[in-house]
Length: 80
Image (cartoon, rainbow, N blue to C red):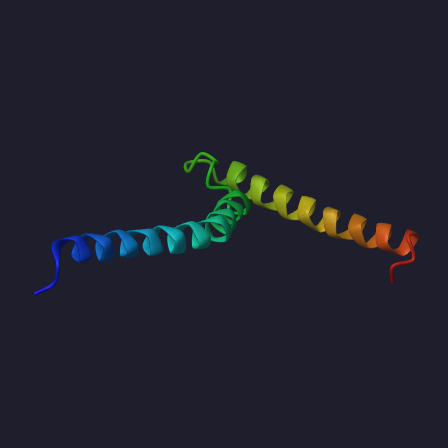
């Protein structure tokens, strides 16, 4: 039979490892989830399809604009 203090140590070690795994996965996963919610316009009123699609189109165009501006900056700095 295992010593009660060893069982407690194993339980604490497992809890620490679970917390570390959750924290490691949480940063990237939560950021991607927030970005997908943003570009899907989940904050738009659900009963207004024009507002929903307007936000989706506007946010998509802004992303394309950032990519184009980044490319133009790279060309000006002769990175490619």
